[in-house]
Length: 258
Length: 310
Image 1 (cartoon, chains in turn purple, brown):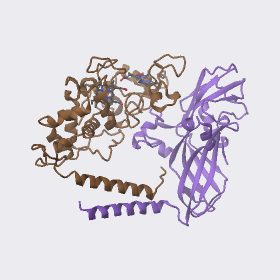
Image 2 (cartoon, protein in one colour; image 1 turned 90 degrees about the vertical axis):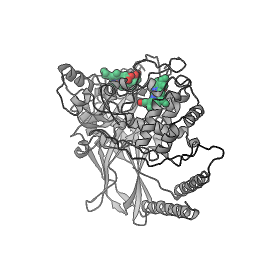
Image 3 (cartoon, protein in one colour; image 1 turned 180 degrees about the vertical axis):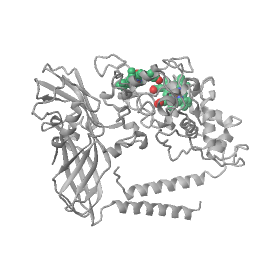
Image 4 (cartoon, chains in turn green, blue; image 1 turned 120 degrees about the horizontal axis):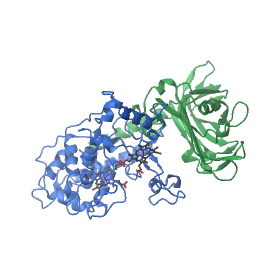
């Protein structure tokens, strides 16, 4: 290669990369939404491994794994038209929330290039819809939240695992956390979409922020107000189990926007 | 996926490229005092190789800087079986990764070249090209290329210097030609350990196993399982609600019989997470919650009674 052709090649490379950057940046007609996802327990930041009082029989819980698939996030404009922000992301607090500062900050998803406007509502999906649930982990590249390595597929029921809520329970207030509990949800029919009447204003070239809090305690509260008896049923891994339905239905009010 | 883009990165990549390109210009000058080192008389026209991947398998993800070629794979196979990679030229990779054992050795602990017992058991290389979440029981190597650098200098394995290995390869009758054909080197002395491990990794990516009885029964449904086989399958994956769940599928799941994640399968009995003699994954991540976790393997048996595509 001559010096000149090298220079041309480099120039071309810089221009190409530059050009593709231009597209990503928001111009005057589009903006960015940052969605901060947090996990709390009855109002306190949920810290992995920290004991939280559970309102049943003087018991307490420590969480080691709290995650969910967040899918089909979209803004709905005044005309009822959707602007889709994501296909699916995994919101996994088990690595971040070991650190109180990171737990307070939350996990931020960034969506760029959203058309400027006021969107009266925001919709989020928990789990994956039936169309996506017909796909298989091997259909996705490594690193994708649904890939084989993500380890969230039930071969037995042909479903992705939508949410995981796991930890250790002290069932009688003795301070000994000896009962492992583990609630995994999934299966067609358990995908939930939640609509927030939360107005989002997207301004040209600017970043708008919104927060989505998950109160993990509220996931375990039953309709009569009592809390799920973890000692009686510490596990759920099979579609149709009552704890699964409870948890998936509860996302509706365990979620709040801030 | 969300990307951040910056011109600064583009620029530094370009500058890096320029340095590289200029560097390679300088190396065009023939090296002095070696009459038979020039390899440019040997044709270099590598043949791209595409691996036959069974339906239902994930995509084989190959690093952009190490595409599979017929010549690269052939060189890798030779290196894999070549005892010259060990200190006294008695052992090769294949001494602990035997094809007839699904590319493991069937032993609890492997013996190294000095007769010393290793600290862990050898691992099957069946479908190793699909292991994207770190290699070894603890995941300390990121890629097959990185991994292949390690056994040569491991005192409990081949216990040799890479410099010596490279020297043996340069002085051998055939390797310079093979390296030329695989990677286009111009001079014998351009053989490096980096190229050697690229070739080994290419070979390893062809070790695809999907022809076992398990595959015929439960992936391709070509034959009927015996009652015991069906019961084992139901126990393993919990397919049949009336059969108790042995829970194996949680960790040995997917078409690969592993999701390549790290688990504590409670084989070591310890009082707390800091007591593991071998902390496994925890030593790599520095997170004590990972102590005692190891990568769930696929099953060597699957490789053992199956033909291996290449």
